[in-house]
Amino acid sequence: MHSAARQLPSSRLGGEGRNTLMLGLFGANCSGGRSLTTVPERWSADWDETLALAQMADAAGIDFLLPIGRWKGYGGATDWQGTSFETITWATGLLASTQRITVFGTVHVPLFHPISAAKMMVTADHVGHGRFGLNIVAGWNEDEFAMFGVQQKDHTARYEQADEWIESVKRVWSEDDFDYDGRYYHFEGVRVKPKPYGGTRPVIMNAGASGDGQSFAIRNCDAYFTGVRMSAFDEQTGVMTPAIEPAREYVDAVRAKAAAIGRDVGIFTRAEVTCRPTQREAADYYRYWVEEMADWDAIDHQMKISRGMTPDMPGYAERRKQHLHGFPIVGDPDRVATMLATLSHTGFDGVGISLVNYLDELPYVRDEVLPRLERLGLRTPS
Image (tube, rainbow, N blue to C red; front, side):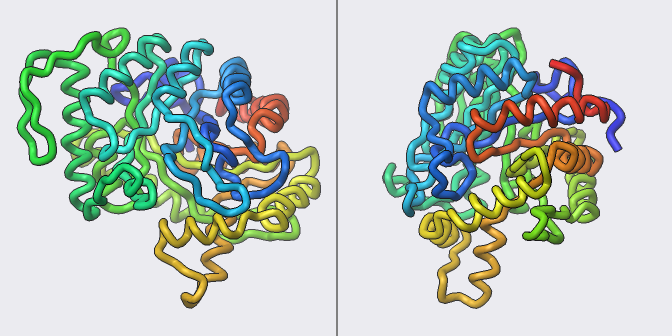
């Protein structure tokens, strides 16, 4: 069990040591957020709503905003995530209008030249006085890459390129007048100013799920973003049970791998939160948005491109249902706070939460869930 807030290495996220469990909002730059639903109140992700959300989250003491790097939607009735803002520009605008919150940009390695990306991110970092964060993505979505005329590399080569990319960016942020001669990048006489704000660099995060991705994050990043599996889900009550022991073992194993090479990484996860005054209200709304109003065509398309699965394959219906549910936290404020505390006690440093409509639902989470986490000793008042 955590007894004090961890301070992430070489980063500024959580640097004040305020919160044992850091909380962020995940996916608010995309239409639909992370909710594959057709409900009319689903998140639109237009600029005015996003700005209002960022300012509300900032005032509430939310620690970070983490966007999804998305270039093309998934089709279906809603073209899920089809409307989205480019994330470095998005972050720069939000950093100019907030005071404390860390805002990440999610950057696809094959689509951004490291020198131009490094300068774009430094610009955002200065706008936010040191509150920009980088979420680096090796890439997987062939639909999007085809738009750019970029050929997807095999899995190992993606992370070899990502190694060179992040090494180049870090050198741009810290050195002048250097040459670089790698397999994927070749530079001469690199000199880029200014450097990141305040003499320290942005926090770097990665969410690679494979062994190569995990190893990349441990070698190069300050924070590793990973999922949690659930062991049981009761559709009548809307209560799910996370697979706590496997998650704890996984977190411990990641920390041990990092320690073996002299590194320490923060470990973050995600959760889709449905919080209402009573358990029954939360469960009813969850069933409504996630099943009765699901965007099934968008779900099928995402499963095809992300997992290579089609409806004619054995076990498709069950895998589709698991894909639909993700990692839900469904309940009244006591239940939601307890589940978030469980993730903290399992070893996670932070959780990126998503909501069906972030701006409508965050006030209730702020007023009811955050005080409970404060009373549990996991967060301090904003």
